[in-house]
Length: 293
Ligand SMILES: Nc1ncnc2c1ncn2[C@@H]1O[C@H](COP(=O)(O)OP(=O)(O)O)[C@@H](O)[C@H]1O
Ligand SMILES: [Mg+2]
Image 1: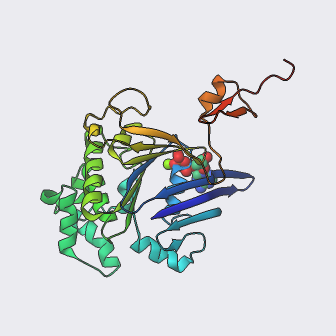
Image 2: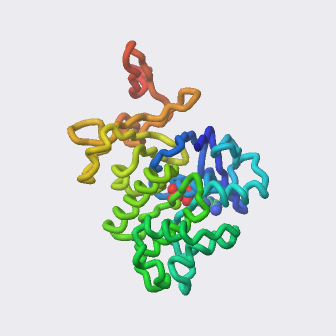
C-alpha cells in the first residue's frame, strides 16, 4: 500500500533549511495496522502529511497504491486526497461543525462530493459507538465523543487508508483505549490500512508493527510475535524476559546502512568512526582501536 524509499523533506525558510526527513524508508502492506513512534521533532507529522497529500516531498520516492506522490499533479492530488486518504488529527476541531449534529457532520463531506449515503453515515457512527448520540449537536458531545465523530468523518468517503496523527494525544487513557479498539475493529471489518503516528509507547501493544523514527530516519522496527498477550497492556519493547509482545529489529536500508542508537554510541564513546568485525555469525561494532597503543 505504502512504499517510501530515500524520502527527503526539506523545509526552507528565509535563512534556514530544516531537513525533516533525511532519506526515510518505509513499507506498509495493504490491510496492516501499524504505528510510527518517535520523539517530538523526529519527522512524524512531516511523513504523515506527505502520505496524506497535504505536503509535497522534496526528493526520494513515495508511492501509495498506484499513485507516485513525487510526480502527482495538483489535480490528481485532489482526487487522491478525496478517494484514498482518511485523516485524523489530535485536535479534531478543524473538521467539525459545532452546531450540526454528529450525523450531519458525517454527511457533510458526503454531500460535498455528492455521494450522500445516510445509511452508511449511520453505520459509521454505530461503528464508533455513537449510535445513541448521532442526533446530538457536536458541542453537546465530550472531547472523546467528538474525536470518535472525527473518525467516522474520516471514513465517510470510504478511503483505502487511514492516517492518524497523535489521535489519542488529547484524550484520557480510557478514551485512548476506546479509540484504539475502534481502529482495530475497522481494520478487521473493512480491511482498511491504518497508520498511526504517536510519541506514546503504550500504544505499541495495540498494533501489529511499530516502526521507530529518529531524526527523520526509520531506525528500529518492532514486530508483534504473539498478538494474544497484549491484553494487559504491559508490553516490553526489549527482546529479553517473558511475556513481551514485540521482537525488535534494526532497520537496514537497501545499501546496507543502519542507525545505531545514540545511547550505545555514547556508552562506547564512538563519535565518527567505529571498528566492525564479522566472526562468521555476528557483526561486532566496537570503539576504534587506539593507534598509538
Ligand atoms: N512548516 C515547517 N517549516 C519549517 N520547519 C518545519 C515545518 N514543519 C516541521 N518542521 C521541522 O521539521 C522537523 C520535524 O517536524 P515534525 O514532522 O512536525 O515532527 P514530529 O511530528 O515528529 O514532532 C522539526 O525540526 C520541525 O521543526
Ligand atoms: Mg507531530
